[in-house]
Image 1 (cartoon, rainbow, N blue to C red):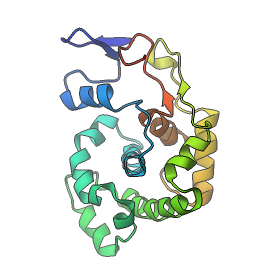
Image 2: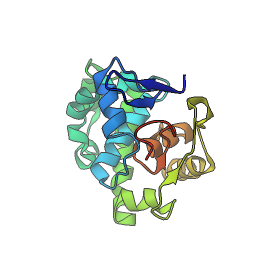
Image 3: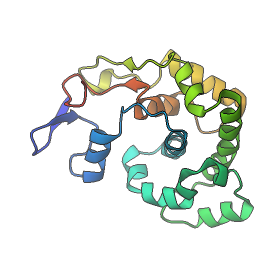
Image 4: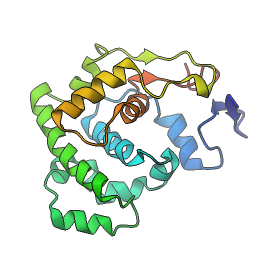
Amino acid sequence: MLLNTHPDGKKRCAWANLKNPTYVRYHDEEWGVPVKDDRILFEFLVLESFQAGLSWEIVLNKRKGFEKAFQKFDPKKVALFTEKDVQRLKLDASIIRNEAKIRATINNAKLFLGMQKEFGSFSAYQWSFTKGKIVKGNWTEKDAIPATTPLSDTIAADLKKRGFKFLGSTVVYAHLQATGVIQDHLTGCWRYK
């Protein structure tokens, strides 16, 4: 299926589960909208890294739990997490309890802060790869959208070199789509324009 048609009559990208109102809202209001706010960029880095190997819907359904567990996605607060916090989060059923991903989030928060100092903001770093321009896909079907591109390969390699974890090219591509650097709504989707 290329698109799903909601009872409201709007055609949406096939990946958006129309039975889940949270997913529909995410598709309609957030996915692909250009983000320049560092706190929101950090939130998506956290959520996308936890999504690795899982469905986005699982992460989206636990988003409020992640927000509480990771101090409203404040990288300054997350960077100060200790071993006690790791052990607490491993028991928190409101999030995905993956110790490696929890530790990666704390590590990534520290590196994120360093990049804010180096570039003025993480947003400046992220958008520098496209010179501030949105990369617009022209896809008519879901299966045509790539999982990675040379852009996501380049950014993932740079983040890895800097020490980031759980942010390979596939995760970075999903992050770029979510934060609007790449606009991959299908051409028939009402959000494409």
